[in-house]
Length: 345
Image (tube, rainbow, N blue to C red):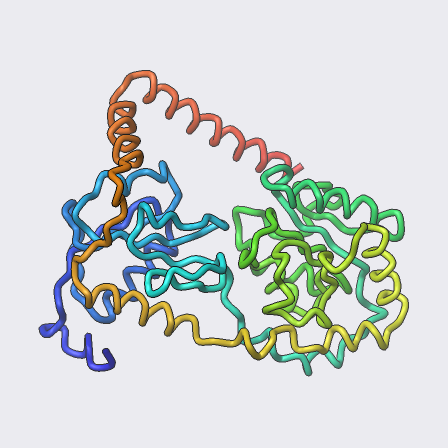
């Protein structure tokens, strides 16, 4: 595999299609494949890459090809539909599945010595930066927790949810990640609650806090302690109530030595450090090198997926469906406009 892709005229040509993925994931898939192969997009591909965005059903239209599912947003692969899959959920399906972190580990997470120079007295207490108010159990729980914590000290909320600041952070449609990083680095604590609680589903909410040196108050993956050092953050899953968590926050907030000890802890367990980029590359290339050889995915003849796809195609051609689609687009556009106006006001 090391010699593949060196000479462009010696590259193997493969027919692919990518559906129900978006933006950076399409580009990342193309970049990986082009390192080793000359790719041709085809309506009769040998290899189909797909996920859950847009309709989430486009893959049903493709037959006689190897289907590779890219698991995002906590979605668990269905091996009655796909031949291979990658995702964050911990499961074992032999050579057909590769578990990878939802959010990659950033090198600057490990540079803890740089935080020795901070002046704790100059740091503000805690922040809460969210735009999603109701999508997922965590969206509700983090609001409840933030309100309880505010009974102790004010929590700064520059986002759309529980907003108590104006023009304090980069707009959501701008350079959001960098803007949020610049904002939260000035705080002792960051409320870092995921939208959902699912094994393997750890997002930038935890990673970003570690990067900039603010202590996360984390809720989400119940198995987070198998990957990250719980001495480096406050893991809500270790406590039985908001009151217990808040008492722990108070303890660290009022003891500079304890605060610095937690801040300087290496956040990632040694057992979790792995070159996932190489693992992904090896996994995909290994699939391609086997050729167009799909697994038997419906051994008893259950074809619910195929029937659903046929029904979807019939539905998409109907007038009412087209009207519905236009209405949905208009609603999404109006929500964006309203959100933009609220941010500016």
